[in-house]
Image 1: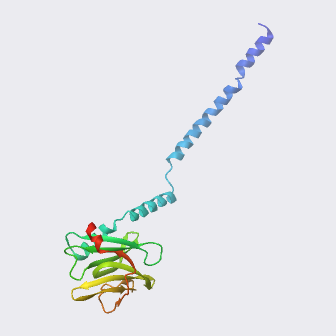
Image 2 (image 1 turned 30 degrees about the vertical axis):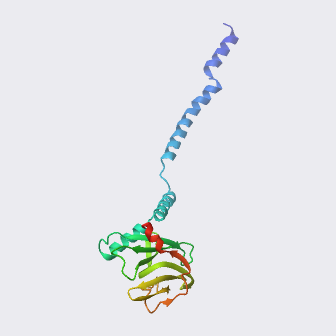
Image 3 (image 1 turned 90 degrees about the vertical axis):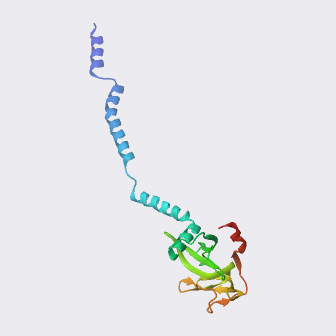
Length: 208
């Protein structure tokens, strides 16, 4: 064997090709990268992310509330028992000008109404349900809302009749954080019209 051949063989054995050296150095780096990726994937969501998700779920729950079911439950709790079938007819209108509709809920039923009419509830949406800002008795239909306002809330116009009361339309104002509970009270004034009509007698035939 010539000297030249022996020199080449010695260099080939002592010095691995460049590609082999790269592979040997790259293996530990690859293991470290995979370990870091695994740790990153297992990291828990941040508090801000969790809070945002909880807030979205809370908003969705409020949006899905059924005001009719809420009114039925509220009436039974207020009266301490079963009042039989309660029909609830609703209408939406922004009464306080905040851009969010309040709900007018007319509750009727054999145990709910008398010769003077039935109950009208005014509800404002809140985070945990609804707040009652009006619970009017002896209300007949139709019911409307006027352009006039009292203490930042639009006046209601309700029909009254029966029970010895002359038929008329009464303006019910917002005072001391709520609407007056008795539209036939001497404190309420007679209105010239119903304004924008929201609840009508023919709604009752739909069952509510």
